[in-house]
Amino acid sequence: MKVSEAMTSDVRIANPEETIQEAARMLASIDAGVLPVGENDRLVGMITDRDIAIRAIAEGKGPDTKVRDVMTADVRYCFDDQDVDEVQRNMGDNRVRRMAVLNHDKRLVGILSFADLALSGARADQALQGASQPGGAHSQ
Image (cartoon, rainbow, N blue to C red; front, side, top):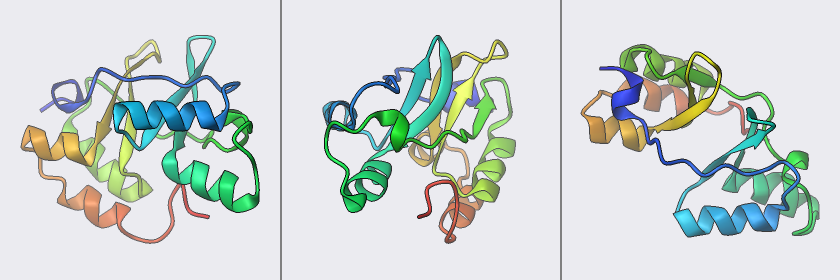
């Protein structure tokens, strides 16, 4: 199965100059835990509800803090035509629960999450085992 068959393609994108309050509101409105961050038609980061809680609120930063200041800039991604089994191993190895999906023009076309893997019938056990280990891109 290809990533394009399992991913969520309806993805909202945050701007790095938006505030974390705006990002949090967007997360709440779509009932998600992550937003890709895009600038000039390119993926420049990801921001999660955990980034907002740990990198902003816990550090005493206010709601007007820019997304750019707390997002993860080192984005892990895969391509839409990759095999799901390969990508879920990569997710486990990199300890990430969600991965940006790009086309070969490096344009964001979706997000692949554990839920997407489970709903598609793909085995996500290897990704889950790896991502459940301490560490990873959002460790503080």
